[in-house]
Image 1: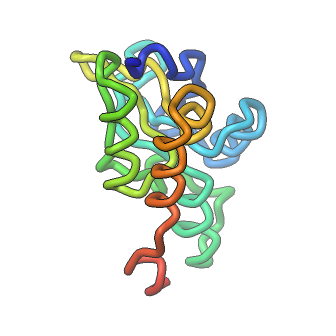
Image 2: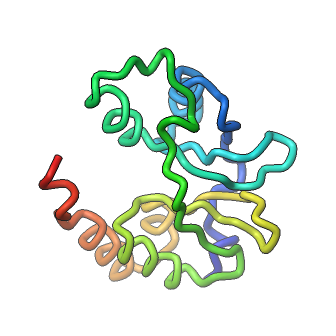
Length: 147
């Protein structure tokens, strides 16, 4: 099974200059925990991702005012992504290796065309694959213990 068969295609994206309040509203409106950051709404070229965890760790936990911040000031820029023609197993392996719950799907031109989440793996993958992803993504990390 390929990534394009299981990915969520209708995704909310934002530009780097979007206010964090807009990003949070997109998360609420689309019932998701991550918003891909794209160069522009017309280009959809992936430049980063903002997760609900990023907002908490990079703003609230540091005493910054999220009402004054943008997606760019809080996004992760070293984004792990998958190609639409990658297998679901390859995508799951990336989730496990990088301990991430969501992977943007990016075509050969860098255009964000979808997202694969842990929930997508649970709905479409085998029980074994789902179990492995949840187990490995949920392992404690050194980074988590330092914060």
